[in-house]
Amino acid sequence: MPSTMPQNHKSSIGYDIFPEECPICNFKISPAEIVSHFRPADQDGLYSELQIVFSCSYEKCNNLFIAKYTSVYGSTYVHNYSKSYPVIFKEKIFRSEIMDLSPNFIKIYNQAAAAELGELTEICGAGYRKSLEFLIKDYLIHLEPQKEVEIQSKLLGHCISGITDHDIKTCAQRATWLGNDETHYIRKWEDKDLNDLKILIDLTVNWITNKLLMERYLTEMQGR
Image 1 (tube, rainbow, N blue to C red):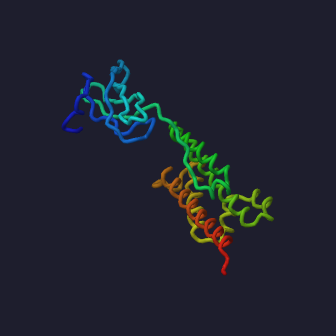
Image 2 (tube, helix red, strand yellow):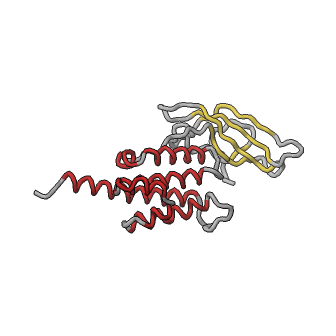
Image 3 (cartoon, rainbow, N blue to C red):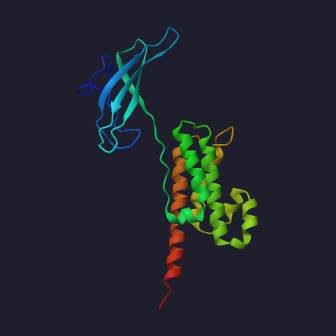
């Protein structure tokens, strides 16, 4: 617990920190406390809860939001910051090369990200795994459009095995391993989580983007 309380806090119930980021605009802020509400634990409850309405200090936002603080009932008068809400989902923006290559990848990826933001962590991993499959298959169809029907019906692992680029293949394989973990009863990679899966998907996207950019400039700039 910090040794000092937030300056100028109004709540009669102690809490540890101000929220450092507005959940609506996602800017780093120094919010102003407006009003607080304390919810004591009932006789069967373990945690007491403090809810505080803050005003965002970013002038282009200036919205109100609620921060939630919790404390083990009876153990302390200081409540610890838990989360802020409402959380406004903002879609991840991908480069135009990926947008043109696989719009369904982007759609599915952002739906998975929205599920994760909504704390639906048991299902969002399957969504990320599905988005990867669309990305890989659309990339292979781009390379070999005459094999579109064949590629569409292949298992993802078989598709990845046919990729000749080492970096794309390596990252996509490992992303698939973690994506499969999100859909199976028993996890094989217990030391990895959703963040690792998203990093590997990002790496795969970056390598594919590099290949598409190289392809574009080689086409546009023939030797003279």
